[in-house]
Every structure is written in C-alpha cells, then in structure tokens.
Image (cartoon, rainbow, N blue to C red):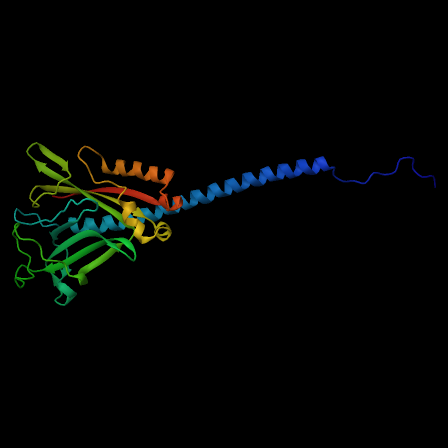
Length: 270
C-alpha cells in the first residue's frame, strides 16, 4: 500500500482559538453573574418593601381602631407631646381596656397611649399603652373629665410592644380654626377642635434590624428630622432615606440602609 504524500493532520484547536473561546466564555459568565446579582437585589428589595408595608400597616391599623373611638368633649384631655425626635400621644377612647394588671376586667373607657421607647437590648420599639378605667374608680386611678388634670401613668403590665421595627414616630394635627382646618405641628390642649392626626413612620425590616446594632438605631432615627411648618414630612423623609441608601453611613451596611421605608397616614376624627 502506497503511503499518502500528505500525512493526516490531527483535529484540534489552535492556541489563538482557545484564547478567543475563553475570552467569550468569560464575558458571557460575567454577564450572567451581573444579571443574577441584579435579579437577587431586585427580589431582596421587593421582599423588603413588602415586609415594611406589613409593619406599617399593622401599626396604622391599631392606631386607627383607637382613634375611631376617641372621646371628643370640651373637657376630654389629650396629651399629645411634640418632642424633639419621637412624639408621644395619649387620649381617651371607648376601646375596651383593663385596669392595672388586668385584675378588674373590662372597663368602659380606656386611656390609650403610643410612644417609642429606646431599649439597649433591642433598640427602638413602638409601645401601645392601654389602661381601662371607669370614672367612678378610686381617686388615685380614676380618669377624670377635667382637661387640667394629667392622666394617671399607664402600668408597665399594660404596655404592649406593637413593633420593634418602627424607629421613628412623628405626629401632626388637623385643627379646626375660624377659617377652616389647618395642619399644625403643635399639639392642641383638648380634643374639642381636633379633626385628625397625620402620623409618619420610619420602619426597618427584620433583616435591617439584624444588620444594625441596637445602639446605632437611635442615631440612625435622628437623621429623620422633626416636622416643620410648611414642609411635607413624608417627602422630606423619603429624600433623606434615598440619600442614606445611596451614600451610606460610616459603620453601617449600605444594604441595611436600603431596607428603610417611610410611611404616612391621615386619621380623620369626627
């Protein structure tokens, strides 16, 4: 058998072909990873928004049920405190409540309060106080229809933690005046001319709470300034939230700051 004048060449890739193939595969892999990261971040942000929506809705719904039954009288005291930082509110409502310790059962009128307390262990937490009293109770514990008399203190047994995901609580007031209803940042003395509350919250979902140490939450909440005349609180806070999510805060994970959300609801009375 006569051998072929040209030996058969072995099939394979040249070095240049291998380099080009690896470069193409690297580019494709990078694009896939970027798409995966973008998708993961989008899913995470969507879950965060959904969780924060639920946190705010739970707080607002509880407040709404109490305000729907607020006692409106010329002599019905309210204690709405516009503090630097988180505000506090306390008012009389027909929502059922218990006397101190819950030992005397349901009462016809309750003193209800909302405030944020800083706890060194868990950080900020939104508390609802509810102290049920008949007006014929013992003098030391009775609620009196006298706007000049301060409310009795709510027992520690009657303080319920609504959420440790609300880190900021701001209240504005709809007041009936001579020329109509105006939105004020100063709390009224009684419920007589009160026509509603505008409450703004800052929430932080569970992931964000775990990522931020409790002792940093108070300073984080301080970035959201008090309500001011002529300024829209929710718009101001959303701008600050976007700024924090973009620029970050030294020592805090930027991803945790992106899980902050701001909410506002108006509660009409009468």
